[in-house]
Image (cartoon, one colour):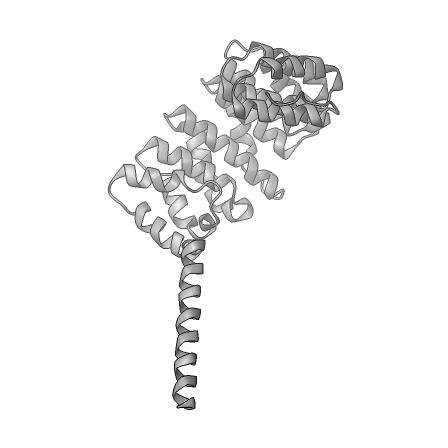
Length: 271
């Protein structure tokens, strides 16, 4: 009888342990490897909507590093949005993305979709920053910064060059000049690029503050507020606080509050 009870107890314990393990696995979701398998299937789909959904899910996915061949192939996809997002994902992969540089240069130089040229420029800058020994992209970025028909692509190409050479005053000033561009998105992209330079771009703080005052689109105001905090000019704090006071978008408010703190100020209590 005692032996039977012991066997029953052990069986019950095994069952409970297996149940807990299954529940724990379910709560954590699929593993990175399992995610990669599913995404690989989606990348091979003949439906561009499926491929688009897959690549859009990946900018911060740990599975991306397991799917570099698929991402490299996606740079040649017939769908411009897929090419754009593939460049975005690849740019985050650092040294693993070096093999994509030639195709990213092709995209920057000749892709008919301007947002794809823009993301190719950004990706090349990030790869160049991560791999200082590779400067094969500099010529293409410099040409795009002068000649591309799209002002956003031009400023992003300049920003990519600055990522690799943050002490280049000539390029910093070229980006700074675009803070007064007629196009508000171009102004925001210029501020975003200068924000990466921190106090090396402090000279541009008044123009960033002016761009923030002019901006109306919440996402642009969020990026401009963040950049103003990054460059670190405390003299712009009154403008930043005034813009925060009139801001209604939660994301933009959050970025501006963070910028106020960066500048040593105290953001007002949340309403």
